[in-house]
Image (cartoon, rainbow, N blue to C red; front, top):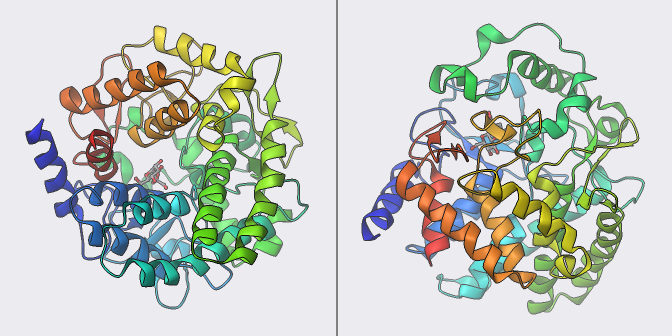
Length: 420
Ligand code: 9WN
């Protein structure tokens, strides 16, 4: 076990490129990614609390004037990635970035770091970050939910963090593919094509970027024009948990007005998430906002209301039956998509493999919902995966094999954090 801890620390130290951590040592992702960085800070916190805060501070240095915190901040040579900074052509004047965001785990992580209380200059650092976090959450509700439905929409599958989940299949198929980008892809040079998104998916990913670039990534135009506009249940659950954590932070810092403002967001989102409950299937589904329809696909995102709200299991025990049924069909939990369905592919990225960062959200949600035994099961599986499969990017739930990039930062971070 000590060995594993040392290996995990070594991975984070190696992938630390000076104030920010690249997702993997393999070269596949030569930049700072939004939710990777936040989740990596949970790992740094276990052995270098100061460095954990630095990760978040650096990330917020890429924040745009309108409040958005980008999916990618490009801070070094990025020719090994496509689409790189010269494709995105975006930034805030200080930092080159992509033009979209990612799941907002920042406030949740900052609350955790604050409650640990072990970093130098904590009060001052929190004081500097809080207004930035508040601006980020405000941006979601103004830019991505202009009608005030309580659910924010994403404009690109990359924003979900679960890029090629079958949940996006129909909404993405409706997007124009544009010209083929097969010859420009770099990812398939690092990982086998069979474990990555497909060619038709990539063509659409890039065509969306080109379209949004032409609109200058202006949210006022994007919301109306985006061919891909989806209110993901996972993304909204992550935002909702972050809302609750932000309220606690603001109140703790004496910003009552800020806390009340975020309570307003959270009240709308709580009601809207509850409206996503499908009583017939006993599952939570998000909505395709562009085409005004429910997306009835059982992805792991449908379990994340547990992470947002500690009263879900009591109201909807049927949700737990789904998780139990999934676990019975695989060797390790939790697959990112329901096993036994035609779309399930145990080795292909977000179409079945296990991602430890999402496992943490599920097991944390289960524990908060009073489901200690299930939570422990997911925890045991998560640690066993690293023990036997190494520090891969994701894992095959049927064999435990580590797949994708190696020496992966967020897998190392979760190993440290989950053992703490
Ligand atoms: C696009 C960095 C990121 C993760 C995502 C994961 C993958 C990028 C890609 O890698 O996405 O953002 O190019 O495939 O899907 O969750 O943040 O680790």
